[in-house]
Amino acid sequence: MPKNYYLKELILESLSGNELSKREILERVKSETNVGASDKTFNESLMTLLQEGKIYIAGYDFNVYTGIKRIQSIRSEGIIFGLSRMDFVEIESLLKQMESENLEESNRASHSLKRIFRRKLAEVQQLGKMNFSNTSDVLFERTIYYLNSQNEESRRSFRNKFAWSLSDNQGSLELFENILSYVISQERA
Image (cartoon, rainbow, N blue to C red; front, side, top):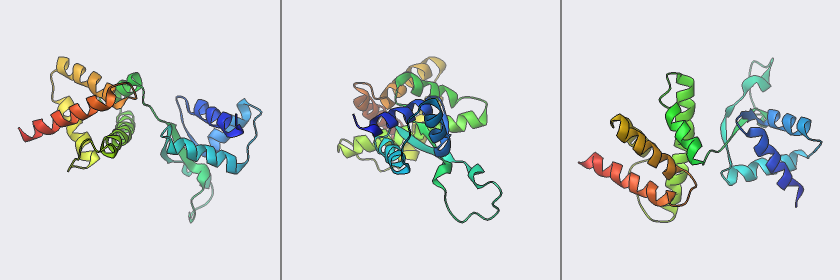
């Protein structure tokens, strides 16, 4: 197998449960293994994982500019990456975290779910199955509003279905379409 295949696997392992800057990922890969890679190979692996949707850009670490007062360039070492969560259990956990009283945890979960929601919506639209006049963020917010407006038993059931629809599991795309159609129909009712 090509060297960058193993590098991609090492990057995914280092991001398991963490959001790390490019610099931190490279440090972990180098310290935990004796694998060395050129900057080009490392960057290619990161870009491939981004294109495949296996990782996402979570933010930027400004600590790479220690001692610099006027920032005039973007250093790629500061880009923070996270592991895309497309598993039912992880998505359901994110939905529960959105209800957290910890504002930072709630915002992080919301951001991750919006990203997953956008990707799923793009997949539906790419297949030409549905066209939506609303933006993905509006549809996401309406779906979350519908979820939160339910009684406890209905909320738990809807949360499970919504988590399944956002996952990569079999039948998730059809369930996602059905949920969006239902939420949109409730809006009109």
